[in-house]
Amino acid sequence: MKKNFYITTTLPYVNAKPHIGFALEIVQADVIARQKKLQGYEVFFNTGTDEHGQKIYEAAKKEKMETQSYCDKYAAKFDGLKKALNLSYTDFIRTTDQHHVKATQEFWQLCHKKGDIYKRSYRIKYCVGCELEKTDSELEGGLCPLHPNLELEDREEENYFFRFSNYQKKLLDFYKKNPDFVVPEKRFNEIKNFVESGLNDFSISRLKEKMPWGVAVPGDPDQVMYVWFDALVNYISTLGWPENKKKFESFWPGLQIAGKDNLRQQSAMWQAMLMSAGLPCSRQILIHGFMTNEGQKMSKSLGNVVDPLALAEEFGTDAVRYYLLKYVHPFEDSDFSMESFKEVYNADLANGLGNLVSRTANMIEKDLGGKVKIGGQREADLGEVDKSIENYEFNLALQIVNQAVSAADAFIDSEKPWELVKKNKDKAGRVLSRLADQILIMADKLKPLLPETSEKIAKIFTAKKIVKPKKSLFPRI
Image (cartoon, rainbow, N blue to C red; front, side, top):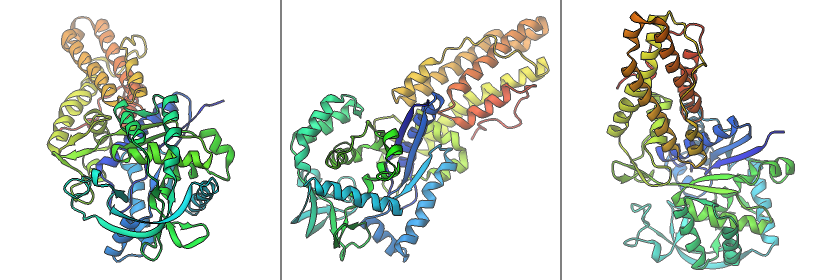
């Protein structure tokens, strides 16, 4: 019987087209999902779109569109990442799906029944960009540091609140029992410090007359759910909760991947909500850093985002995957620039892996008639690639493959098979056979990382007659 594995990204807002920061998150998730599938797991890989809240309501108005039509338009763009980045996700949930709406209302009722939802008036400073209230200590110069171009709103109204304050000890106990719950450790320490400093109840609804685009609060037609309460429930509604208990219990809890700006919501607020509803907490939270654009933080509100769809169309799917996995740190903030992207592409892919494949296939075709023994000299040891992926060190996994490429190039330069074939064709055959084996091992280890490239290499070197590809895997740019 297969083991089950569940992984999910966060759900990006559909208030703008996809950006490179979310592409990073979903490519990381895809590598993990593919690796688990290769290991024999039944994988449920979830992503989707977050479609409620004020940002989306206002963005639709700005484009003079009906809000649902606006969501439909942008959800399709995010689903387009599947082809552009060669993603293997199994489910794409939208928070406007009727099943999700019903699941969210059921979740609300469970928390309410527990006594963790109550109504009160309050006054706050609110960042529309974050869809979160902000305390003075979180501000820089009176502005949200994540959305410095947006003015904070002063809000005063009567809303429902979640008793977050009830869950300080329960969360700390949970963290203690699960020492690898948040990865990396630095982010885990951040959330533990946040919880230890004391928890304030947070608002989970909005007045419908002010913000009509949201899930209706059960039993109160004047209120809609706060977007964060609604959106977080997607992680379980996508599994068929609450109706499909068997499916839910066979996959949940799972691994969630999120950016560091989502740390509080994913690893504390959501876990407290799960505890309130009487459901198991997530298995693990993997936190990645921000992507910056030539030294400046990328932000949809700042309008300086990089379009991963356009990047993949121009340079190829695996070129984008490679850069995100190799040159963007798995956990820390990293910089993106087109200059860096092109340098990496030419050095590592065009002149590295792509050149190795072309020159080896060319020598086998030219000097051995395309015939070489495969599988007899599998000496290259790339087992550390698997270990690196298991540790979410995708950059290290590709570094190991690059080292194998360099070693193969050095072997070619040392043995000079193009000269050897004139003196000793059998020995030249053994040299090229060894090279072909090493390249096939690389292709095998690249399956979760660069799946398209892996497949192309395997097709070349397992053919009855090996022929140099007409076009390089990675033409120089």
